[in-house]
Every structure is written in C-alpha cells, then in structure tokens.
Amino acid sequence: VPSDSPADSLQCLQGFDPGLGLMNPMMVGVGLEIIHRQSCTLFPQNPNLPPPSTRERPPGCKTVFVGGLPENATEETVREVFDPCGEIIAIRKSKKNFCHIRFSEEFMVDKTLYLSGYRMRIGSSTDKKDSGRIHVDFAQARDDLYEWECQQRLMAREERHRRKIHEDRLRPPSPPPIVHFSEHEAATLAERLKEDHKFSEATAVLFTWIDRGEVNRRTANHFYSMIQSANSHVRRLMSEKAQHEEDMEHAKEIFKNALLAILYQFEQIKAVFNAATRQKAWDHFSKAQRKNIDIWRKQCEELRNAHSEEIMGIRREEEMEMSEEDNEEEEEEDTPCKRLRTEDTGACDQTHASLKEENDSLRWQLEAYRNEVELLKREQRGGGARGAGRHEEDPPVTPSCEVPIQILQQNMHHLQQQLLSLQEQLRSKEAELQEAREEHRYLQGGVAHLRDQVSRTGPKGAHTSPRERRSEVVMRGGVASEKEALLLGVMSTFLHVHPFGANLEYLWSYIQRLDTKVSAVDLERLMVRLPNMFRQELSGVGATLEKRWKFCGFDSLGSA
Image 1 (cartoon, rainbow, N blue to C red):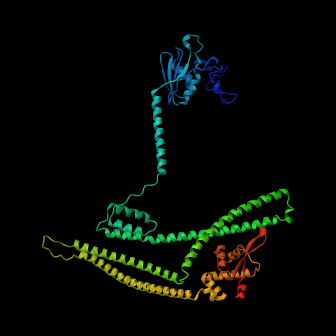
Image 2 (cartoon, one colour; image 1 turned 90 degrees about the vertical axis):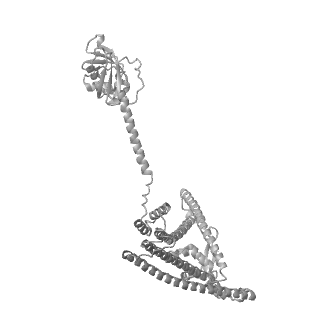
Image 3 (tube, rainbow, N blue to C red; image 1 turned 30 degrees about the vertical axis):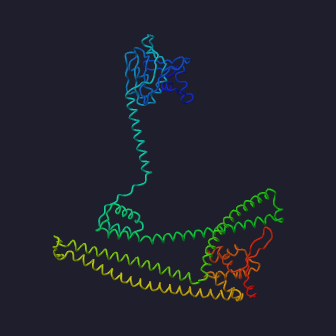
C-alpha cells in the first residue's frame, strides 16, 4: 500500500518511478497504484481498457474540464485532489457533478490529464453518491484566449522591435542635413574646401547650394571663390595618382625580384636532387628512400616549370614594352636632341599655361572686387532717375562706407600689381618658348643637311673602323647613366675572374649584395646591349646544359 504523504501521491500522479529515479509516463494511469487523499481515495482504471479520449487543445489553454465527480464531492475535495498538479487560480463547480479548474501555467494542465479515468471514492462509504469515475479534458475559456492573444501581440511587438533594430544596424547612416546658404556659412565652407579630410563633405554642400539656385549676381563672387578652391585640388589628386602608380611599379619590381629568388632556390633544389640521383650516391639509398626521392624530384620539377612559365610571361610583357620603347627610340634616332627640346618645349608650354591660369584668376578676382565697389556705391546713392530726362546728383558717400571702399581699392591695387608681374613673367616665358622653337627649327635643318650628306656618301659603316663602330654602339644604347657605368665595371670584374663564365642568377646574386634595387632583367638587358663586351654561351651536356655569360672585352680590343 503506498504512503499517504502528499509527496508520494504526487510522484504517483506524475509517473515518477522511485526505483529508477526517472519520470515514466507510460506507467501513469495504467499501474495499480492507489492515490490516497485525506478525504478521498483514487483508484486506477483497468489497464486493458483504452485510454480516455480528449478534445483538441485550444491555444493558451490553462483551464480543464473535470466530469464524473461524486454528487457529494465539494470544492475543497476537488482542490485537494488537483492541488498537487500545480497552482490553482479558480474552481467553478456546477451542481451536475462537473467543474472547471483554472491553473496559473499551461504545463500544469498536462499533469491533470493523467488523472482521467480514475475512480474517486469519498471516505470509506460505499454509497453511490460518494463515488464516481472522473473524466479530465481541455476546456475553452475566454480568459485563456485573451491572455494568449495578449502574449502573441507582445511577442509580435518584440519581434518587430528586434527586426527594426537589426535593419537600423544594417542601414547606412543618413547624410547630415545641408545648412542654408549665408555669407558666414560660405566663408566656413571655403575654409573646409581647403582641407583634404573635409573636402568631400564640403563639395556635397557646395553642389546642393548651386543646385538649389543660391547663385545670383550678389553671391556669384562667393561661389566663384569656392569653385576655385575646389579646382585647386586637381593637382593634389594628380600627384596622388602618380604616387600610387609609382608604388605599383615598385611593388611589381619587388614581386619580380622575389620570383627570381624563388626560381634560384628551385634551381638549387634541383641540383641537390641531380646530385642525389647519381650512381655513387643512389646505390646507398634503400628502395623506399629512392621512391620518396623520385616523387619529391618530380614534384619539384613540376613546381619549377610552372614558376618558370610565370617568370617567362613577365619577361615577355617587359620585352613587349621594351620593343614599343625601342620603336619610339628608332623614330627619334635621327634627331638626338629632339626629345630634350620637346621636353623643354613641353615644360615651357606647361609653365605658360599655368601662368595664363594665374593671370586669368587674378583678372577675375579684380573684376569681382570692382563689382563689389560698384555695388557699394549704388547702395549709398540717395536717389536715381525719377523721370525720363531728369537725374539727380549722387549724394556724398557716408563715412561708415569709406573704410570698406578703401580696403577694396587697396586690394584692387595689390591685384593689379600681381597682374603686371605675372604679365611680365608671361612675356619672358613666351620669349624663351620662341627661342626654343627657333633652336628646334635650326636642329631640324641640320639633321636634314646630315641626311643629304649620308645619302650622297653612302652607308656610314662602309667608311668607319671597327673601333668607331663599337664606340658608336656604346654611345647609342650602351651606357645611359653613371649607375650603368658602375654596373658595367662590377660585372666586367666579376666575369673576368670567372674565365669559364657564370650564369645570370649567379651574377645577379653577387650584384644584389651591393645594390638590392638591381634586378636580373636589368643586368641581362645591359649585357645584351653591349655584345662586344659580353657574350652568352651554352655549356654543359644534357640536363646540365645552361647559359653562361663571359667577358670578351679584351678579345674585341685585340681584334680592333
């Protein structure tokens, strides 16, 4: 017989198995346990009978219907039976042996369903009015539906709030409002246009003012000065672009040097594998070691070939660029000084254009000051034309307006002086430009005369010695700067102490210790341009075949 304690009764009610210490819902309602209460006893139904049926659970259900109660059952008896299931808020009992019980939470309703089918007997009486088989089912209640709807609306509001916060976090910030135009705001904006970090915001404000139609005859000078300040940033942007291009070229050079260094290391690894596969070393390795070495060698060769193709692609691009530059140089070979004169002419033209721009800007500022003086004079006039042929004389200007007029006149005088100095500079630059053009025409005439002489005397190489031809080659494309002359001396010394020659990577690794900015392509290009000093030969047999450079300057001098 189970204990009469409320805890044991609740464990039986909830399907708790004391031996296992776990909830066992399958035993609830089908076991043989009898639940004892203080005023009644609950007997389980026959386990062979089907479980009692229930209706569909309404949303937010916290109320249950309990039918089949004994006629003598009171509200206290019902509370005593269902109180272990949870907190009871209200019990509405009817005279027809049924009642409605409302709990505080929804999960408490599920516990009461386990008591459906139990036979309830009040005390130890055997009277029919003191016994009955109770039936527990879900009940529809307006209070439950109202609370459920309120909870759903609250959850919907929270969901909308979370969604709005998420959308606000993802939405880009709105731009700040544009202030209205005034002279004070215009002066502030002109200062902001001169600052790099505020230039974008200031140009947006300036564009909005112009688009709104704030430009008129009175404010035109203010807007002109602001537009001029915006235009002054063009030089800064061009310099930034040139700096970025220079950085990109520098990065390309570093990338190319790094690829060459990697290729050199691949060559060293390949040399190690070639040495390991020779007969005198290969025989000492085991079969597994030979297999691993062979696999590693093949992988290294594949990576080296892919790397070599990438470097060859970079060299092809450089050769294409060099061919384009050579074509341009061939077109300008007839006029050695043409490029210098063209650069001087371009510099003169650029200076001339900049002086013109400054001259025009000063002229426009002078006109703006004149317009302001005229506006001030018109504002101080007391009268005007009152009839078709009658005019009144202008009243004298008040002392309060004399000070700004004097300041404007001083500014006009200063601008006129600047304008005169710029005009003098412009005349001097035009004179220099004219002299450069005349010298250019003179050089063109001299070149035409030399062409006529060459066409009359025949090819130049037929009457020149080998030494003169060699010096001519050096003067044309050999040494272009002092740095190349130093490189020629170092390379000649290095190759002279290597009578059998050296490959390009070996020579470049030595030069890298002296100057890290020199690349292997520059060295190869310089040696190709001087065939009488450096000669490239193939040495080795089979897999050891490689290209080596030799110094042949003494042989060329001896043959000359």
